[in-house]
Length: 149
Image (tube, rainbow, N blue to C red):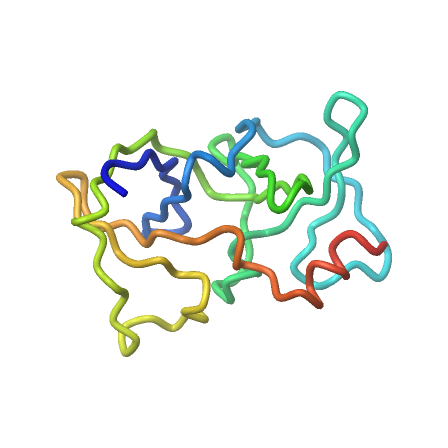
């Protein structure tokens, strides 16, 4: 595959990365409208240029607590299988150019996350990044829930 571009972001002290091909835009935190009976990890919905987009608290989704919004909080708008989803993260860092050869499989014993959506760990000069496969973050049941309210 060669060199890929990833957007890196933080949640607590951990660094994560997502393939830039899934990302449409990154926006500052805007008002999120809560939705009754939405799945627990869904923070609510936002309206971006007339499109209603569900927003997921990435920490809740990964079982890491929940985001405490501040001036650095961002919403990463992604396109997964033709559907837009916003992911709430603590902060966004930069675009990384990562050669596939420096992405190792994540050691199962060190990860307390569901490893099905972890592509691996990228070793870069800026540290270790957990590379997420954003297209696998939701189970098919969760996808139906996400767009069903």
